Amino acid sequence: MLEKYLKQTHFESYEDFMANFQVQIPERFNFGYDVVDEWAAKEPNKKALLWTDENGAERQYTFKEIKDYSDKTASFFQSLGIGKGDMVMLMVKRHVEFWFSIIAIHKLGAVVIPATHLLTDKDIVYRTNAASIKAIVACGDKVIIDHVNDALKQSPTVKNVISIGPEVPEGWLDFQKGIENAKPFVRPAVANENDDIMLLYFTSGTTGEPKMVAHDFTYPLAHIITGKYWHNLNEESLHFTLADTGWGKAVWGKLYGQWFSGANVFVYMYEKFQPKDLLEMFQKYRITSFCAPPTVFRFMIREDVKKYDLSSLRYCTIAGEALNPSVFEEWKALTGIKLMEGFGQTETTLTIATLPWTEPKPGSMGKVNPQYDVALLKPDGTFAGPGEQGEIVIRTHGKKVLGLFKEYYRDPERTKNTVLNDIYHTGDVASIDADGYFWFIGRTDDVIKSSGYRIGPFEVENAVMAHPAVVECAVTGVPDEVRGQLVKATIVLAEEYKAKAGEELVKEIQEFVKKTTAPYKYPRVIEFVDALPKTISGKIKRVDIRNN
Image 1: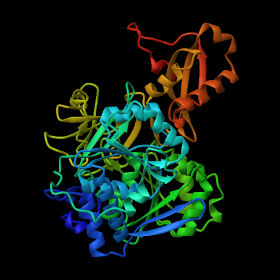
Image 2: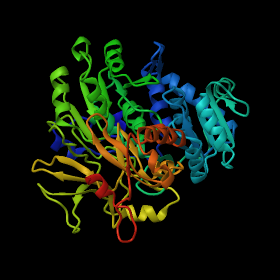
Image 3: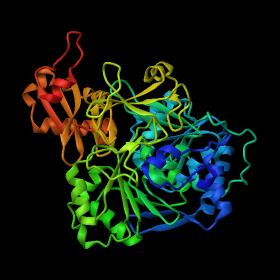
């Protein structure tokens, strides 16, 4: 498969990789037809996806089955009037219907919007109206159903809501019956163009509502490096990336690069994370490679790792937050495996990484991916050299860069300001050493990274401010050994609540926020203060709060 898209697939060194890696982009590329269906035609019984759950259920799908199910799903969606350019949101956790649906949406030339099942009705309303979403496919869980139903009252563009089960409430369509009764799929007469929008993610920023990051149909090609070279996969691999399908990490680690490489994708459906369960999965299913945020490894090394047979596990990669070198050393001592770090954003694919030919430096993100011209931009406008730091930027040289986002959807001003003078600004600060390794320092803005989640302070502040006790609020991240950062809310109370400041009120506000926005965003740390530090113009000085 890879020979079709790469001029050279085997490399002797990082230098060879940098000099000779090149993706050949077809005139019209569609991952559904050109990868999934191609595997199905070439090797129909080849293993594609092994789905399991915490109750012991398991089901191995071949590429032929993924093709057939995605065709049925595409036909079902077609019958609902979904076609090229239409927006479809998926809120399906880690159920296999995610893979059926995302491939089907690609085949139709429509736009897929993966979303976490943790969204509240307010979050859903914002997304449906901002992107003019036409259909929502969701789990038939009561909480999700209630949030979607409440959101529909203010979501005029949504024409269909589809439940994958177990419940199919009144007014919803039954996904399972829909694909069961679907007519033979007819490929759309009008094919997608490479620069059509294929994928849209809502990603948190420091101010305002989440941004809409749009990627075109060439985006999966940029993940060849992710799967083949960062995850180090081959056709015998059983790869496990720990990520919910609502997050960008899912397509990084559970779809595009993995299936380009012909690997079998492992999926584990669970409700509550338990580190020992992962170790049991490694042992039971003979998983060969694993990718997760450093937080997960912090939890796992606290278990009795030595009692598990991890002999099948050969490669581990990490991303999502900075790695503590002590975690690297302990995991290596327990398993003999080095953690290979990587860095990228929703707007990009893998940008900097520790690749197979590079010896990892614990705590370093690694070296540049040859798809991107990465540099560190100093505040004075010059580029940083060894021993210096600056903002991580990507130079575009006025050309379309494979893997770099197309635009912030419906926000040309933000797009223009982010890709300024042929330079994409990541907003992340790093330093570079004499060997070309990058070292993460922090954000130029205030986005909080906790347990692999990106959390925008503004979203949390809005939720906190809705509580009657709160007059003012500033949300920041505070360091935490386990989660990387914790969400902290610094609060000025209303006069009548000041006498109640204490643990009981802290818990009340936390529970309130959990019900108002996605639960993972709630502030685990709350501090009551008399006033917030502000600039002359009245802006809150979050840096002062963080440094306090």
